[in-house]
Image (tube, rainbow, N blue to C red):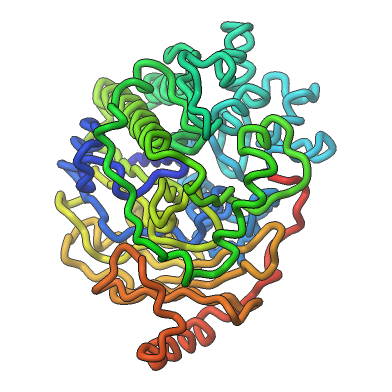
Amino acid sequence: MSKNVILIMTDQQRADSLGCTGNPVAKTPNIDALASRGAVFRQHFTPHQICSPSRATVFSGLYARNHGLTRNGVALSEDLPLITHDLKDAQYRTHGVGKFHFQPILAGSEHAMPDSNAFWKLPESAGWTGPFYGFDTVDILIGESVSATEGGHYAKWLKETAPEAAELYLPENALEPQPDDMDEIWKSAIPSELHYNTWITDRACAFLEEQDTSQPFFLFVSYPDPHHPFSPPAPWCDMYDPNDMPAPKQEPGELAIMPSYIVEGDREEASKSYVDFLRNPGPPREQGFLQTTQRFSEATMRQALAHTYGMVSMIDDCVGRLLAQLEASGLTQDTLIIFTSDHGELLGDHGLIRKGPSPYRSLLHVPFVAAGPGVTPGPRDAITSHLDLRATISAFLDLDLDPTDGCSFDDVLADPDADGRSHLFAEYHPRTRSDTYNQTLVTDDWRITIYPENSEWGEMFDLRNDPGEHLNLFFADAYFADRRALTDQITAEFPPLANAGGKSIATY
C-alpha cells in the first residue's frame, strides 16, 4: 500500500520551542510523543525567513529567486509544478486545511485569488473548495489573530456559526487589560472551541474520518500561530507564568556592530503598530516588523513569551487530536507525518522581536520532526533545508520528480548517521528598502551574510565559539581570510539576484 503523508506546518515557530528540542518549559506532550517514535532534526533550516517565500519553497523545491514569490505581496504562479502535483500524478488525494499564503491577502478582487480577502466577496466564492495549487480541495484560513475573520472558509464558517464572535478576537474585548507598552499582547476572548486552530483541526480530522483507504492521501494542516500578535484564547493564555519564562539571549552592545538598519527600524515601528497595520495597512512597510525591545519592560517581554508558549501548547493539543483521529481511522502505520514551521521568531534574542532582513538563527532554524514507516527513531544532526522537502517526499514515496534546487534527505530519515548538506544558502528579498537585500551561507562552522547593495554592511559568526550569533566578526581583521573564502563561495555558487521575483500586487 502506498504511504500517506501529513504535513503539519505552523507559522513563525522557533526550533527551540518544543520539549523534544530541549525547551525546559514548553509543554508539548503530543509533538514530543511523535518525536519519540520518529526523527528530530536538530539542524533544519528555511532559506527564507518570510512567510510566503518559505512556503512556496517547501512546495516547489526552488529558491524564491526561481519560484518568483520573493516577498509577501507577490502571487505564486499557478503554472509552477509543486509537490501536490507530483502526488496527484501518482493518484494521491490532496487536501489542505488552514493557512496557505501563496497569494497576497490584500490582492484586489480583479485578481479573483482565493487566498485573498477580496475573493470571498465575489459570487464565485460561493461553494468554492478548489482546486488550488495541486490540491483537490481546500479549507482556507486567511491571516492570523484579528485579521483571520475577514475572508476564507473559516471566516465564513464563523459568521454562520456565531455571528458576533469575530469581535471577540479584538484587543478591546480582551479578557484582561493589555500591557501599556505593547498593544500586541492580550488574552483573546474568543472561546477556544471557535478559535481557528480548533476549526483547522476539526476540518483535518473530518478529512481523515471520511478518507477512502483505497486511495493514498496528502494532507496539509497549516496553523497560523504562534505568529504575533501574542493573543491566545483561554485556557492557553494562562497556561504559563510569565515569571517562569527563560530570559532572551542577548549581549550588551551586540547591535552596535550589526548593520545599522536593524536599530533604525524602531522609527518605522513607532509610527504605527503591527495591530494598527493589520486593521488599516496604509503604505507598504518592510517585511517582518523588526523592532528592538528597548521600549518594552521585562514584564511585557515575559508576557509575550508566555503567550507564545501558550499558542504552541494549543497547537500541540490540536496535533494530539489529529494523531488520535489518524489512529482511530487505522492509518497511523501507513502515514508519514512531518511537523515543521515556515520560519522562526526573535522573541527578544539580540534585543529584537518579530523578524526582518537579518537572517539570525532564531529565524532560519525551524523545528522538523518526522515519524512513520521507514523513519528510524532518534535525533538527526545532519544539515537539511526546506528547499529539500519536495525532493525528499518524492524519493521517500518513489515518485518521479524533475530536478529542483533541493536534494533529497530521504536517506537521513532511514539512517540517523547519514550525511546531510555541507552547507546551505538563504536569501532575503526586501519590500521597501532595496539595500537590505542579502545572501547568506550557513555551514557547521560559520554563518555569513553579505549585502550586495550596501558594502558597509555584513554579518559573520563563528558558530563553533558563538552559536548564539552575538559577536559579528565580518569586519574583524583577524578573520579576513575566512570572510574572503566564504564570500567567494556565495558569489560563485549563489550569485546575487537582487531584482528577482514576480510583480507585487498588494502590500502583503
